[in-house]
Length: 446
Length: 174
Ligand code: SF4
Image (cartoon, rainbow over all chains, first blue to last red; front, side):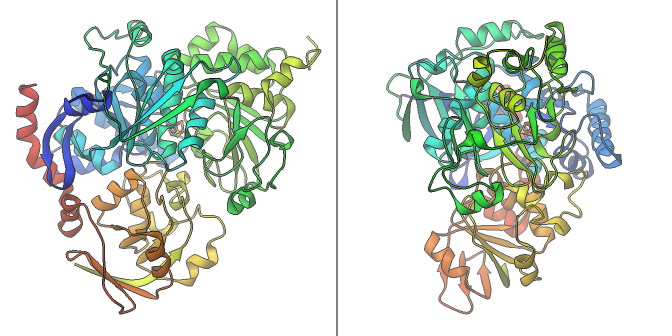
């Protein structure tokens, strides 16, 4: 039988078929962070003699609220810290940490053909490496730490072929949002999105991660991209430089439950106007005439309004979607020599990214522009710390979710690529980077 | 197992887990206290939520539980007294979390859900996979046959623990 890439990885990890179309699927790596891990770790300690299937298959870090902001989050961090130490689990404490979906690949912990799970929905990011990587709940994660396995329904596979090449001003974020708008905000439910085509092969690993990161925003179990020379080069440059892995690809003529084709040449910079990531339009466009009434009311917008007329109160460049070095370079290129008009927070995806950015002087670019340059954390992406929105505040963000209240109670979020966020920060309204490039003189004296 | 109780209908699609339990409450190392904050992130719903105190069956829109993987959403719902959720569809991770927390996830076609949203009380026979709204005709529904066991008898982690020897054997032969 001719198989998709996903099916090959899946088949190689099925320990046992279970009733009702379920399977016991072996997990090569379990990623653990401080928000979702403690209850599961405590349950294993209490009910199963603290026995882990294989502590060597776990990697843990502090990322969501790091360093801790209060007693409760300090207790979460300390619980993971002591648990990791007790079991000899690889652990990345503050200073050496990063957002899990940024840190795990940059350290070389994920290789093609692996299975990875984490109590975090954006684990799908790691599908960029040709791995089967998925988010799960706390109890399922505990099950994987206890038994090495998840119980899963075998997902269907949707082939998402992206032909042609992305235009110079379009990014992987724009492609990710366009995929969601194309298949629908819940159109990927029950599927793995297998990305293929010339535009995908041309993406860097960072861009593939941005694309796969948002597979969950279409409801998909995960996204996956076949490993190639780009993958090999990335892995060879990681600290652990994993030597042994085999690149797999879909068989020619593999059958897919669904197929979608997107012409990359039609992709333009987009921005979300509504309350889910599927509600987006080109930055040059308008709020749709048939826009959902509840989304409009929450966002305080009217149909037909040009999105570039929408004024913002804050800008955020960060998150597991768009806070890698390439993202920071793209934002810095727009901000260099300019001044931001609204409070702007730049939060690198990991401490390693932070240090690389500083070696390149990007921290000076951001701070010269008047932005706040922070240590790595999830920060305001999930409205827990470091820039939570006040009710009614409007933020343009390089993150992945614009749900009501996501970045703070009553806060409004517009999702966009880092360069769009930077341009918007300068102009104080949603803006295209081309508007900045077109400005005849720098907006600040040199 | 019979789940019987008052209905709370929230006829909205795409209620994500941030709306069920906002991240500002995700600061505990256990599942306690989440019920108090159930639906704190749902805009304009204070009156709606207050109108049905003690409801144990939630009837809602498609793609319920999308977004964040946080199991806190299931803990918030069960902590608030919900024992079943009826919707046209669920997001995958929420569905898995519902089963492991004995929150019965019932997917039915939109017209049936619309009908059930008007009911005062619903009685659900989980083992038989049927429900009745206000004493009406029984309506059948599907459940994952394996995960149904975890709803009826708990034991998700013990089930996996019992698999460890065969997992080790599989890994050794890999
Ligand atoms: S950056 Fe945001 S989306 Fe990514 S893991 Fe952190 S909280 Fe989740």
